[in-house]
Amino acid sequence: MKSFTTSSTKILFPLILSLIIISAYIPTLSGHFILDDRPLVKNNLSIKEFKSPAFYLFQEDGVCDKSPPGYHTGYYRPLVNVFYTLDYRIWGMYPSGFRITNLILHLLTCIILYQLLRKMLGGSLIPFSVTLLFGLHPVNTESVAWISSRNNILVTLFSLISFYYYLKQRDEKRIWTGVLSYFSFAMALFCKEFAVMLLPIFFIYNRILVENRKIFKDEILSYIPFILIIFFYFILRANVIGSVLTPISTPYPWGNLYFVPFLIISNLKLIFIPYNLHSFIIQYPDNYLSWKAFVGFFCLGLLCFFMWRERKDKVVSFAFFSFFLALSPVLNIFPLARAVTLISMRWLYFPMVFLSLALSVYIKKLTKINYFVAVSIFALAVIYFGAYSYVLNKDIWHDEESFFIQEIIRFKNNYYAYGYAINLLNKKEYQRAETFFRIAVKHYSDQAKNYINYSALLIETGRPGAALLYLNKAKSLTMTHDERGEWFNNVGMAYFNLRKNDDALKNLKKSVIFSPEEPQYWANLGGAYGSMGDYERSVSVLKKGLDIDPDSFQLRKNIAITYMNMKDYKQAVLNLEKIPSKERERDKQANGLLMSAKEKLLTKSR
Image (cartoon, rainbow, N blue to C red):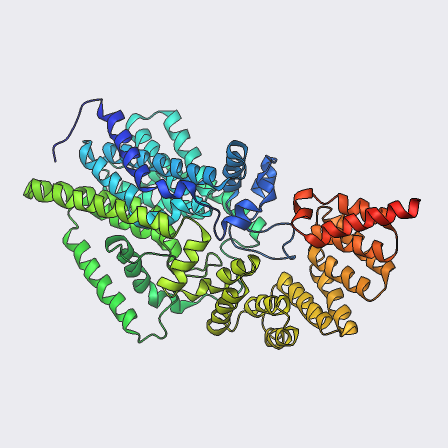
């Protein structure tokens, strides 16, 4: 491939790059909130207005006011919510807007990668080709299309900017380039902890690619600003999540080291053989003698042999060493977070940018051997990557319905059966919901949430006795604070439907003790008192619930029913009229109650 050197390529190539990548991501622009997007974005009250810097610096991702005391996720990414807040101010709570921002950030990352490759390798056409392959690679769809995976794009974007200005500072010796590198590094680190690996990447860059090296002492001194930023970051992190690395208190699993080759090769397979991609739920092989573990060692041995053969090519050596450094945080050598899988496409977004350097070298070599073959392979790769990314954005990452169907039906990924069952239950599709609850209970019998939510379906469909059987199976299992509250609520409602009022009240009372912020539990407890004729306690309990959530439809409806039974029609009317008319019209009972209360109030006034 011939190198373009005209200044027009500085604008033309990034423009072409952006247009091609956008074409592959068109389906995602009309997509919805999915999975973690709900708690981290849609239901995240903290992003609806800008907070003080201290708020963001001392906030742990996934932990909110409703989280139980001492609960930790292990995720400390203060700047992510700042970006979500910016999105909310621009787009409102529309998922398409958040997805557009993810795509814009992806395009910016690709443009910076293109500029970095040009600076390191020269030319324009090969950096353009490699960046286009990165931008279209189907593995990256998870980071770009899934809103709550934005942290992977942000850490990569700011790391590349830091790297770019680090190189400029070395060449130009200007203070402002160094400052920009430090600032971008800090931004990357506060978006995701992966950025800490940039410092050792700088070190191997200086060891491998720089000819006129500084004296070792001077080089170490040049890293001091980065070290201070990391030190400050880890002090804040430890203060917020309760630990420098992870809040998990289990002893360090030395056995994890044995399976590192398996994880490395599995990740490389996703990059070099992008086929049958989806949301993986992968754990370690069953035992140390598993064929997967041996294949991992064998393939890693081949890779080491290849790197030894290519050791004279310094760019390739730097690319692979940087890739492994960037990948190391997800090799589970140290447990860094509460992840449900050991391999995920989104975790490859950051490491893949460093492989781009090696790819650039081999594309250049191939063009010298046979230009036509090089162009043909590149064209086929672009078509395949672009088409596959389009399909993934359309069929998996667009909305939860398509995501769950693809994962459960096509890929037999039963981990998501529970989530799909919940969606179906919320839509009152009881028969289909029951099918997937049974799958969840069968394959994840150690998870209490499967039994608890299946029992809710059984109660709603008039089978309280069966619900109690499943709730008893969950009783001895480990539960979160909220799950325990839901368990007591469901037990109480099952007994209530069986007309065992004493048992019902005993459990419903416990549900509001475990989850006092959940309005539905107060509505159920108050409704139970009202059904038993204890109207004063019913009103008292329902008022406590309304103090927590004045807009709760069920609380307003239940307290109106209680006031009707007390013949206090005025209070019944006042509470029913506070329910938005659209919600009231969807519930025939609430509409009928309002009409009846008004008629009786009118009759009483006469």
